[in-house]
Length: 350
Image 1: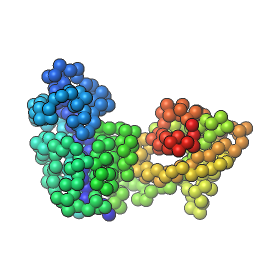
Image 2: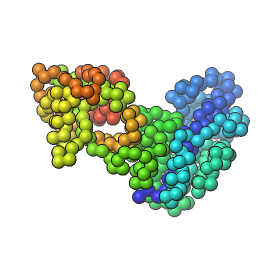
Image 3: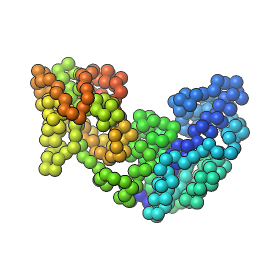
Image 4: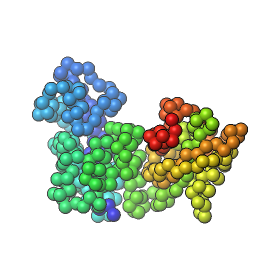
């Protein structure tokens, strides 16, 4: 059971990006460098922040960077707000007896002032801020607070947060509310990927909205034709992105029986050479049409008859056959991209 929650601040609990960008551009301007747009900053910023500034302002001592950052950061903090669902999340976590701690790279003075102004400071047992490398700090924090790794989760919006949690053996949860996109966050393989914090209490069994409290098991297949091309379908359920056909397992079916049925229903194809590839935990997928928690059982297979034509049912709007390289250039949903990457890594497609 998760009893302890260690959370990042910026991009996870609070939206301070405009103020951070203002401070960073102040540093760049003082050094005669071109300012960054919001999109440029999000694409280039990374943690530890020393790596980012080594690239942007090489040779500047860390102490000087910290001084200039504080000078340029808006001191009123009026532009900083709690992210959506954060207040409700904090209240539910506290009501269920979970310990809340902040571990942040942002300056302590800023985080403390923002938390107080936003009315949430008292919810946190400790705010450990101004941390350059969370991967090193996390061990000391756990020891100081007597938190057991198996009872603790790290929640953050950047790969560095996930890497820090993994370094200490914690459950890692990435939220798509901050500085890095879902695709980038998946590079660090978090245990859970969440659209935001609204649905996290469901994972604890604490309610918090409609839908099943249990994961839904589904099957899907990456289907190859005789030319080595992959079948992709586009559906509104996944924000009109391209993906693989598949669906839910019915009671009494084996996984492979469900796969063959779903593929026949959705594409009109029969399969041969069915091979299991991987399971994906898909918690609150940001591209899906509604709140959901899936266990995706992914397979690879071949079209049994090259003369068979794809006939879509009402669930999909379009299909195409693409080479693996071409497929990776398409607007894929995240689980499909992950599956193709894994198949290429294992030499199942080329």
